[in-house]
Length: 155
Image 1: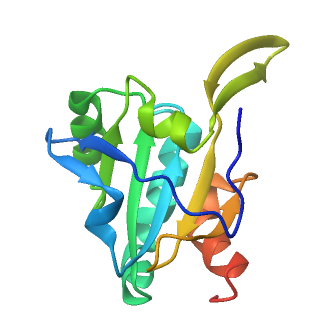
Image 2: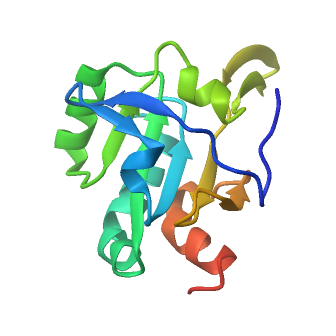
């Protein structure tokens, strides 16, 4: 698993959102972008993380951030997740793991003593020039938006 770090250029990703529309890094040129990777729609930790970002969405956008979530779930699963929790941001469906692997967040995980391959819950904050400003590997799912702003010195 290669891992991007602060100061690296963000991968020039492209994926499909919950409506089948193409989403690329270049769509956010000149904007700050939060790209968060999560394992599965509508599970407790992932829901808490998405709702934290939803609840602070106005605060994030007022500071110039766009928000994009990425998982291997289908477009249809993303649509249901967005509708159920009233999420105001884009979710990329990445079943082929192109975006996930470009960011280096796919790899070995352990849960209840079992090892398996999966998405590591991580968040990347990308500046207006496409440079990674912050990588958060220990995500506080319940307070993720606040965590991001604190780590950037904006809270």
